[in-house]
Amino acid sequence: MNIELDQSLNLVDIDFLSVLSAFDEGVVIADKSGRIVFYNQTQAQIDDLEPDYVIGKSVPEVYSLDQNSSMILRCITGGQPILGELFVYRTCRGKLVNAVNSVFPLMQHGLVTGAICFIKDYYLLDKKISATPAFSPYEGHGYGNGTRFTFADIIGDDEKFLQSVKEARLTADSPSPVMLYGETGTGKEMFAQSIHNHGPRHASRFIGINCAAIPENLLEGLLFGTSKGAFTGAVNKAGIFEQAHGGTLFLDEVDSMPLNLQTKLLRFLQERKIRRVGGSTDIKIDVKIISSVSNNPQQALQEGQIRMDLFYRLAVVFIPIPPLRELKNGVEALSRHFIYKYNLVLGKSVIGVSEKVIDIFRRYHWPGNVRELEHLIEGTMNVIEAEDIIRMHNLPRHFLPPEFTLLTEEASNPALNNRADAENAPEFRGAQSGQPATDEPHIRAVPESLLGLQKTREKELINIALVKSAGNVSRAARKLSISRQLLHYKMKKYGLARGSY
Image (tube, rainbow, N blue to C red; front, side, top):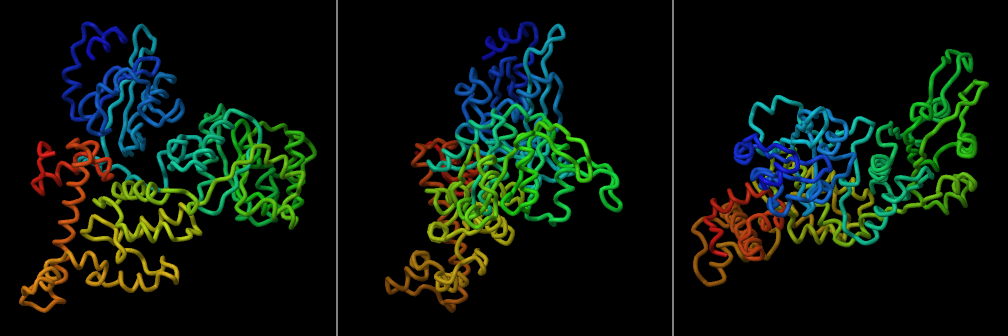
């Protein structure tokens, strides 16, 4: 490792590797080509990856990042340090990490020879960091161009879903218009921003507008701009088309745009020019158009909601995004992702969802799709107390549809929730065997039995994960969707030794 670093960066006489190796922050060094040449043990713990596996690989091979989203690659390209940036990334093995990163270019004779990145895991930050602005699940990490998302943020392994992601990636380099078709909450804007950040326009602005949210009498001026004197109080003002020049314009719910504005949009697509409201001169605009529809486009065409000639201009590339209910294992994967995310945000230690809840999730229609699932997980984790597993009684009562009313009533009483749980409780086993379960009333014994059951379940889950991972703590932590450090703590708590597996 040391020899490789010295040879690639020509640092023969500098003895700092021993210090970096023992550093209590993660340290990653890459050469000018983006190949990782140093990776310390702290970073290995943060990522749950082995140094020998990482060394020699390129940054995109180890992390789900590209030239635009990787801080290391951006630093190498720009030659400028990036300091204290809140950053969320995913490793090649699927672990999501929330960290604060600082990257510095390594210079020799005025030329960039690589970059060194210092990573502070969000869980390990001390109290002095708490004075900085809190990480918000809504603000994302930001790229300075009006976006918060890249393809690295898109979660899913269903074949149909991955095909949509693949098509979106392929169209990123093209100037051709793209239309995204998906129900509310499927992530159309996330796809649009990812396309922008993956393409040659990533350094320019991304502007999104919901055509259904703007009153008709304001939408034209907002899109195309106004000229002084066009109407009382009008001033010379650039519209969104001009503001997005050189970048990407995302027209959400374009099928709700008034027909007279659809005509002006069609003219732009044909001539690549716009004219401000009340103006007399044409303005040439270079912008990539991404649009979206939530309703079936064929139905919108039949009902005259969208002009046919405009539809075919906008849908040069047509990408359907499947709803959550059609994604095999989509609910489980996304639930794990959102649990991890809100563990970080809310300071919780939830490790998963019960089988009964997952069964409900699989059978539920999800009219709000991924957005509804995220809000449900967030809301549930806000009110969950000491439990590590999201169970039926944790779910909000308004969530379940009528066919699950009985389950809701059962879930509202922890003493009745899940007969299998009750049968494993000490008082139930005692009654079955003819032995006295407790000398206190049954209702008073229930809370203690549930607490004991919770701990027993947690220990069993950890034990199973360790057995399946042959004692490998990193792999077991990934199976449980918790950090390696948290798993070590719980193993110590329950007296589970790694050498026993």
